[in-house]
Length: 292
Image 1 (cartoon, one colour):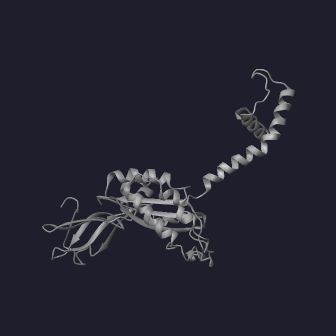
Image 2 (cartoon, rainbow, N blue to C red; image 1 turned 180 degrees about the vertical axis):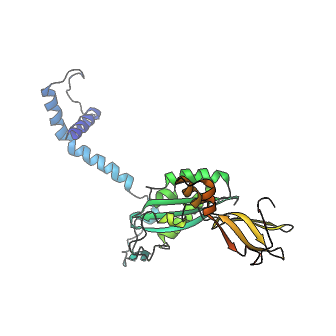
Image 3 (cartoon, rainbow, N blue to C red; image 1 turned 120 degrees about the vertical axis):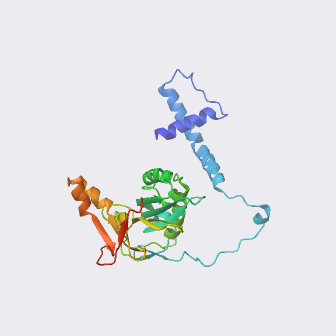
């Protein structure tokens, strides 16, 4: 009510119609009553003017040709096709109708690095984000910022947000397409996936599943990092071909150290081998893939 009265006073002062107001520093109940009386006279007219102005902004602008066309009624109402979302078939018409958990890959323009982005969306809102990058040192810091930016945004907001790195932006674009078309990994999972499902991709120690291997025509292949962990030895057979490797699971190693296990003991407990790694199995020698 106070707002309406103030608005009316403003319109009165701006009106061409003269009002017998006292100077600004003089105010009384009589003047206030006069103002209220004048307000009643102008209130409806001013309100109609305001709404008319607002409605004019809402109106579409049509060309002369379209204005001269007759109206042809629209017959069928052909709604959106239903898409699978968390075990349900949903006819999505708004962003809040979208839910799902999925992954996507993005790359930067020079393609020197890429990003794997995992999002868990509930009712159009990003509730969980996992950002993994490879190939560019700057991307890791971009991922740190993107991981703070994404949660809490709608997928439409996120699509139109600068996520610092071009590869992350591209991944967001690819994810948006998957999610809104119902191509998520939780499309047929009743109730979807719980918040925290993204961590399952990392495994024990919460370390990204990353493979790093290097080779040349002259010197052959070097295993540096595989799913099991950091490669410390590469075993060769009598033909000088790779027949196995030794690894250290860095995630488990750090967990053990944090629990107070001595570093040497912890290292030994998380070191393992794969393939033929003994003389009995045919391994002739081992090399350090980073030195030999």
